Image (cartoon, rainbow, N blue to C red):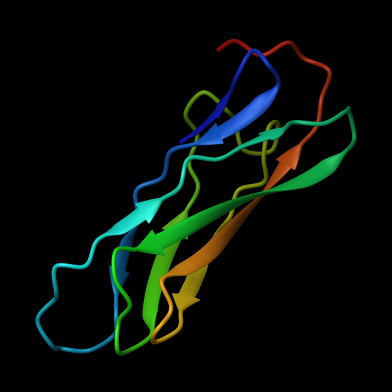
Length: 111
């Protein structure tokens, strides 16, 4: 869910799932989307909100995270560009980045 705050920043709360693509039982590693904010920008501006996703410990195999944005207090096409995709965290790493394009405007946003 995207939310536009009164200070013209964009926050994102996102629930995602992960899989290493194997049939091996899952480990106790957990995934976190790091809370992120960025200025919305002026009318006509397009900027990217980059959200870090982190694992509690590295995996011995690549971890694929599938994600999709959805409307909450922000609306696709007005506040951000609808997006879906995958981010792969390489074996041995613990973080990746999801990018969401933010559309600037002059509207005063409610918190």
